[in-house]
Image (tube, rainbow, N blue to C red; front, side, top):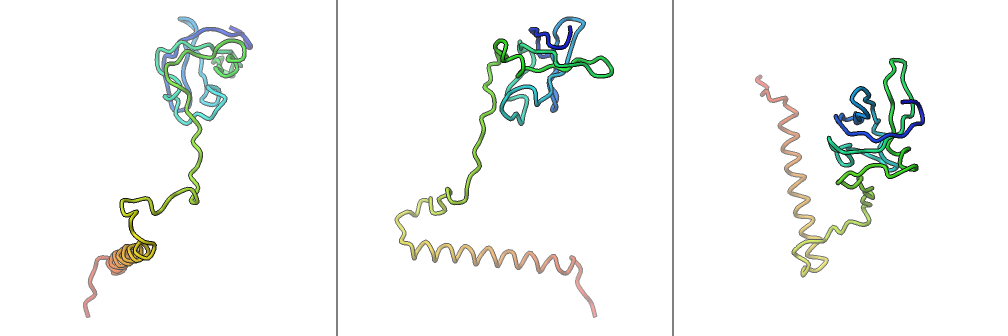
Length: 145
């Protein structure tokens, strides 16, 4: 195999940083997590599994002669891989303005009732925090005079 060549391979091992792909019985290379897909991949197991047939491109060799492979670069030449799992979808962050704080079973309550319920819950939580902090201040030991 030489740099730039494209081959069909089989995923033989998955690690958190990448997947090892066997091209032939004597030739195995690493597909780094950044070379799996065009989109961000947080978990390789979302895109690949052991035994998957993938199309890879040889992108280089390190000083020890180990092959560096890429699935996403081979995708431009032919289909990347035939994994049964879909690539991870990008999840949009949730903005505080998008969260409905009053989404609950008490939708029939008026604003004033909801506000008083919120105040009651808040007071209970503050009281619990104060009790917890007082117990921690003493360090668990009582002072004797």
